[in-house]
Image (cartoon, rainbow, N blue to C red; front, top):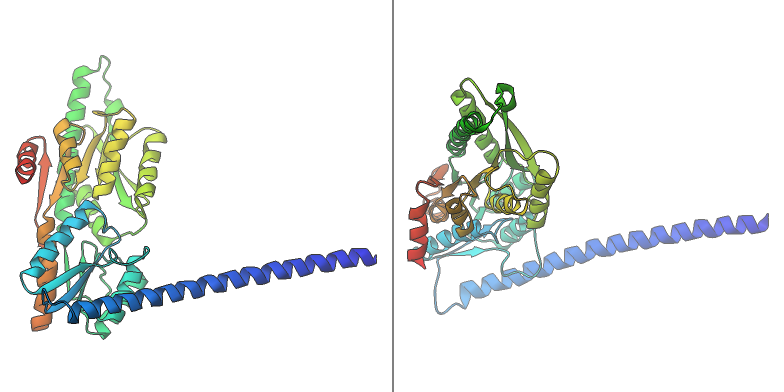
Length: 370
C-alpha cells in the first residue's frame, strides 16, 4: 500500500515538474520575443538616426516607409520602385521596411516599428482586422500620416487609399467569363456527336480568394464578376461561380491550396486569379496536370511569366496594373498631406486587359526594355 502511494506521489511530482518546465519555456519564449523586438527597434532607430544625420552624399527632407506582407513579389517590388523614384524627385526617401531588418516580421510588427521610430509617413497594404485599425489610430495620435495601398481599412484613420477600381476589374473579368462560356458552348455543339443541352447547362467558374487576409477589395471584384455575368447571361449555359479559399500566408501554402483544387474532383473550366502568385501557381498546375487548353485562366498582373503564358495560349487573359502609378500616387498623397494637411481620399491606378489580341505589343515592350 505504501509503495502504491509512493508511486502515485512520484507521478504527481513528475506532472508538476513537467508543468513547471512548460511554463518556464513559455515565459522564456515570450521574454525572448520581447527582447528581440526591442533590439530590432533600437537597431532601426539607430539606422534612421544615421540616415537623417550622417548621410553626406544625399540629403532628404522626409523619410517614408512602405510595408507589405507580399513585399518580395514582382508586383510589389515594382510598386515600391515607382514610389522610390517618385520620392527621389521630391527629396523624399522611401524605404521598403523589412528588407534591411534581421529575421521575418509581420506587417503588424513592421507597422509598430515604424510608429515607434517616428517616420514621416507610412504606406501599407492594410486589412480590416481590429489590430490594423488600432495601429492606424496609434499612427494618427503620433501625427504620422498613413496611406493604405490596394487593401483598405475602412474603420481606421488614414489620409488616403491608393488602389485599383475593383468593381471595374470585376466587370472586366465577368465579360471575359461570359465570352468563354459562349465559346465553350459553341465548340461543344460543333464537336460532340451526341450533344445534349443538359451536359453543358452549367459551367464551373472558380474564383480564388485570399483566406489568410480577407479584404473588401477582393469582395468588390467578386461582386463585379457576379453582377456582370448575371447581366450578360442569355439562354443556354450558365456560370456556377464558386469561391475557392487559398491560404496566401506564404508561397508554399498558395501552391498547396491550388494543387488541392486540381487533385480533388473535377477541375473548373474557368479559374479567376486575384493576385500574381495565384496566377503563376495555377498556370504551373495546368502544365503539371496536363490540362492546358481545358482550363481557362483569368490572371492578374503582367509579369514576364504571365505574358509568355498568354502568348502560348496557356493563360486566357490577365489584368495589367500600372504599378509605377500606384507607387507614385502613394508618395503624392503623403506629400500633399504633410504639406497641406489634406489630400484626396482615393487614388485609382490605371488597368489594362491583356489577351491574345494585344499580347504581342507587350512582348515587344519587354524586348525593348531589355
